[in-house]
Length: 530
Picture 1 (spheres, rainbow, N blue to C red):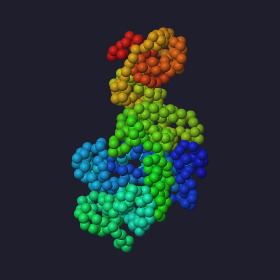
Picture 2: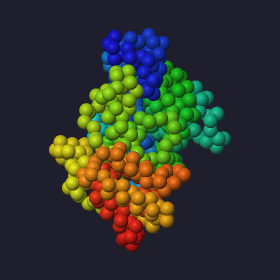
Picture 3: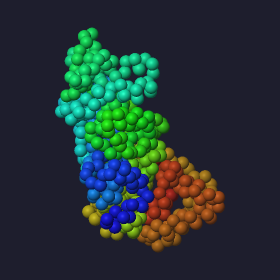
């Protein structure tokens, strides 16, 4: 066993904890080599949202931790499974062509026309969106379509077992349903030969030898159809068990709202002769209003939204942190996660191998994070953009190159990337919310004192710690009981916002002279008037 694999045995980061549970599963089964299958699921009734990305990202982190821990003894697969044969039950509010889509309710998602007009079906469009952002993040995965699996016969063997053990499956599901639903429930949903819809109708009879069921079609006729070859779709919980069994899935995580579904599907999986996968239930993401994000509502953020204002690694960092804790998922989490990612990246090079295994960037970058870091934080760039009313990267680089000798877009491409995000975020979120105020008497006196202290420093002073000391001194001299109130005053009066970066660092990058001018303008009321 390699030294890294030995360190992984006791690593405390949650992907390693999950990997250890998976190793124990394999040991119980007597498996020492072969293939280990990880799976994530996606329902393409609506556009892929950030929760879909989170499940793939977290599962990929567990997969990599497992590969390191087992020193490559197993081959691994990560299946991104799209349930695109599911019936189209409801038109998501964030899709175009609402009236047209309503006319196709009940059809398999792979048969519903694409309202965007770019693909053969709604499912094909959304599957392509899913694959595009997974590819963009460099995930190692295998896309799998429910429609293809059913139609190709790859599920047939397990479907016939399900037919034979029909009553055992009913005994698991029916106690969880209401009386009316119990009377009509069947795990088999036939595809109507009349209109192509996925029918939620009772199974009237079964022929195990022929491998068929009988049902009443939409035209009132009693018909017989094979359960194989894509002629039926399986209800949600039995379908999950079908996948686990047919694909020999070893690991799949899911949202906290699916705990009961996992329990029921696990029982059905055992009835089918399979072994339910390991995994855990992660907490759900909430939107700005505290509601669960969903594809049908289109609330929260999309992956594209995040990538407009933040680097991809910051999104992966958000997914790594505390997966079992409910978190708000809205635009204001982007700067915080960007800076935390940058801090972890800077710390990585100074850590020993054991500590590195607990660093988020090790998991974000499959154990090989980039060496380049940023000498300036994202929050500092945001406030620089705010103070300078920056509209171009050239304006921002004018400050950054003076702060970091010789820095340019060519020598610091990461900083250049951050500058672009900072300008966009400032324009769309900070600028519309800016609200300057005038200082009260004590704040004004403290700011005048700060001007005097800054003017006493040598021209060109760029020492952030020295500047921070002078800012502190001005606040203490003004007898602020809580210096946090002093810093809040600086942000509200000078930047028009409630919070900001370490102020000494801001002065260092914005420049002593320009900061003095900014304070004088604020004291004269120019910022409020502007």
